[in-house]
Amino acid sequence: MRALPDGEQVIFIQFAQEMESLGLLVAERLINIDLVDKTLGSLVTTAWEKYKIMFLDMRVKQPDPFLGEYFQWLAERIDKRMREKPRKPFHETRTSRHLER
Image (tube, rainbow, N blue to C red; front, side):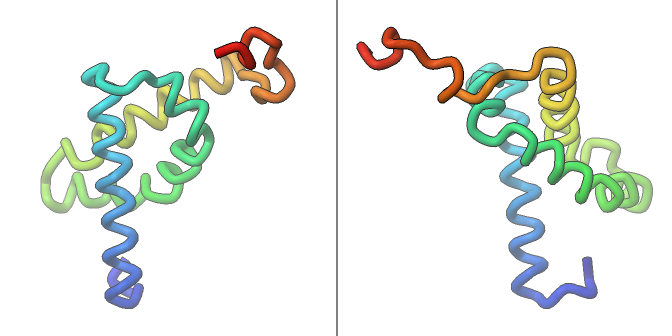
């Protein structure tokens, strides 16, 4: 990460913090995981795969086993949901009931 320009390092860290906060909100049941699945879905799991090496390395070097714990947890939950019960796009499943709201 240090090879990145300063501005990109800030963006990289900020995104990781946002994913960590989102994971915490889902874990504490302040945000429903269905909403995250519908709005972000695979972005969470794809992002975790890109960040995973860095977090695992930092957990050892800091040492701090809690770094990125909620980001990881959220990505694992979303991945499991996508594999076990993939949802169909809304435009394929919507009914007239959805239009009446």
